[in-house]
Length: 291
Image (cartoon, rainbow, N blue to C red; front, side, top):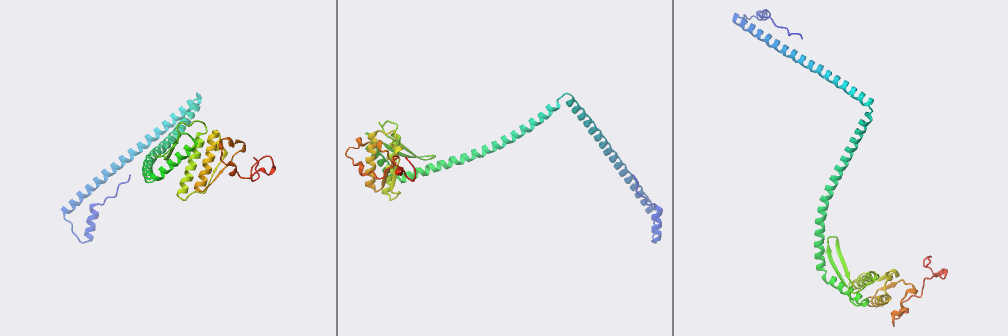
C-alpha cells in the first residue's frame, strides 16, 4: 500500500519567503509537530486498513475451503447412495415430501373454507331466526285467512271421512310448515285425499279474494288406492264446489274405474264430456297420442 506524500518544512519556509512572510522559530516548531502528528495518523490508518484487508482475505479463503469440503462430502454421500441403491429411496422421499406439502396446502385451504362457511352459517342462522320472527308476525296479521283455510280444509275432509281433518300453518326456520291430520282415516289413499281437500280449500280461498286461474285439474292418479266411497264423495264435493265458487273442475278418469254404484242419485253423466279418449279407434287419441 502506497504512503501519502509529505510536505517538508523547508518547502513551507520557501513558500512563506516568496510570499514575503518571515516565520519565527516557534512557528516552524509547531508546524513540525503537526507534520509529525499527521505522519503518525496516516501510518496508523494504513496499518488498520492493511489488517482489515488481510482479515477479509483470510475469511474468504476459509469460506472457500469450507465450500470445497462440503462439496466433497456431498459427492461422497451421493456416491454411497448410488452404490447402495438408496438414491431411489432418497428421490421417493422427496416425492413423498412434495406430496405431503401439497396435501397440507389443500387442508389449509379446506380449513379456511370451513371457517368461512362457519361464519356464513352463523349469519344464516341469524337470518333464519329473523325470517321466522317475521313469518310469525305475518301469520298473526293473517290470522283470519289462516282460520278460513283451516275451516275450509276441515269442511272438505268431513265430506269424505267420519271425522273432520285439521290444518295448521306454523312458522319455522325454513319457512311455513303445513301440517294436516285426519283422525280415524286409514288406507294408502289418505294422502291423496289430503291433497284433494287442500286443493279445494285453495280454490275456495282464491274465489273469496278474487284470485286464481278459474280452473282445477286432477289426474286419475290422485284417486289411486282410494276407496270407492271416498272417490265418489270427492267427485260430488268437487262438482258442488265448482258450482258454488264458479270455477271449472276437470278430472281425467278411466271409465272402468268410475264408482257408479257409490254415486247414488248423483247425475254423474251430466258432468262427463262427450269426447272420450279410446284405443279402439285411430281417432281416439289426443294430439296424436294414443291411450
